[in-house]
Amino acid sequence: MKINSEQQAARAAGPNRPSGMAQSGERETVQVQAARRGGPGVLKVVHAHYRQPAEGQVLIGTQFAGINFADIMARMGLYPGGPRLPLVPGLEVSGTIESTGTGVEGFSPGDRVCALTRFGGYSSRVVVDQAQVRPVPPGVGQEAAAALPVTYLTAYLMMFTQGNLQPGQTVLIHSAGGGVGTAAVQLAAHIGARIIGTASAGKHERLREMGVDLCIDYRSGDFVAEVQKATSGLGADLILDAQGPAHALRSLKALAPLGTLVLYGVQQKIGRTRLGPGLLRLLWELRTVRLAPLRLMNASKGIYGFHLGRLDSRPGPVRKAFDELLVWLAEGRINPVVDKIFPYDQARQAHDYIQDRRNFGKVLLDFRAAHK
Image 1 (cartoon, one colour):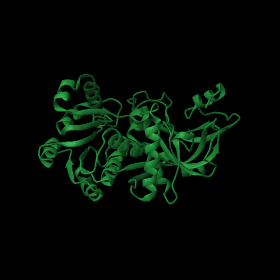
Image 2 (tube, rainbow, N blue to C red):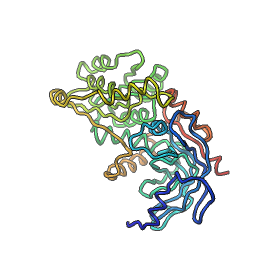
Image 3 (cartoon, rainbow, N blue to C red):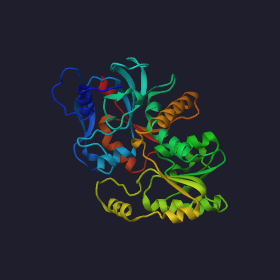
Image 4 (cartoon, one colour):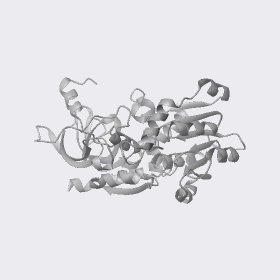
């Protein structure tokens, strides 16, 4: 599909186009925007304008937007290659198609959909490329649809594409009570893997109900020792770790030979403010922590990195996973855990809630009131 200069300009304007007088072909949207980097207090509700969808694009009236830790990192200026200011966070939405651009097939106004948005999702209207949009299966609520794309795609691709997790194998899921963590627990349970999860003690009962075989309190327990004990000294076949470099070195000790460690975040040191002791320690770790290749060779262990937002060059596996996950969702094999839904004008409180690690599962923003 060729894109002419006018379409390129429209896409470049994107969701962060400044508010002002509407021009021909534009629609108003309510956004949650950050004009500067910092804590949750930088988030403000603004009115802006979206152009009509260009060729191959659809305009979605957002009902719910998912909140991910990547949004928090982008707001703080810590997201690698993140969007420029003013920033509209949000990597996923669910809603209803309002209009379509030329060349769009399979979608019509009124269709219920969910989509990956690549930031800009904290908006009452978003313009998205057709390839990033999927129909919401009949009988599935818009809340569940908004909670699925980022966390379940992340968990699926890490566990099954990179980690090649098999039934009966042991997976260690750090932050098992978070958005990606609960998604990974459901997917691992679905294939019959043995699940070990780290989380605060208050989340253990619910994790056991979801199928976690061994829960470890990351605040007081030694997860390396407990994993080794639970696996008779072998270690876990797969470990998912979003905590940071120094934590990854400990995870490596809990990994079995021929096992895989997947790193996908730096959550451990991120608090409420943009700068502070935790962030300074994180920056120091990023510069100083090294994983010795020879040591990995001798141990027969593997380490992967994962970043869903950097897979533009490999769209095939992402699309395949997205389609399969929606089938599983429709069949009831998976069911996104939505912990809390905040009105869009309480985005600050929602970010606080996640950074305080109070959530069990997914947190959403509700944009339905913006359409009344």
